[in-house]
Length: 62
Image 1: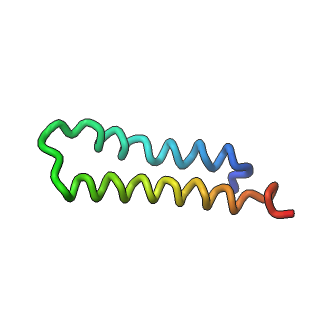
Image 2: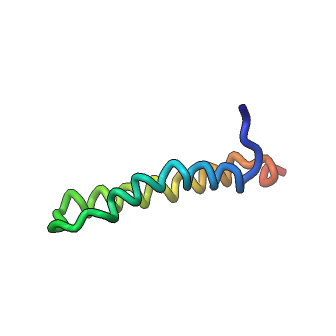
């Protein structure tokens, strides 16, 4: 099954990322250095996923 279009890939990536982001947002204890590291890592991976979806979109390959 192929997903066509930037919007489709973006929606799929958001659906996949939302439980992880929800779980990370519900931590109410002390925020340790490793928590901050993982939060920053997730932001970097999310941005990389969006960029990858944009680069793989055939509409931008002209």
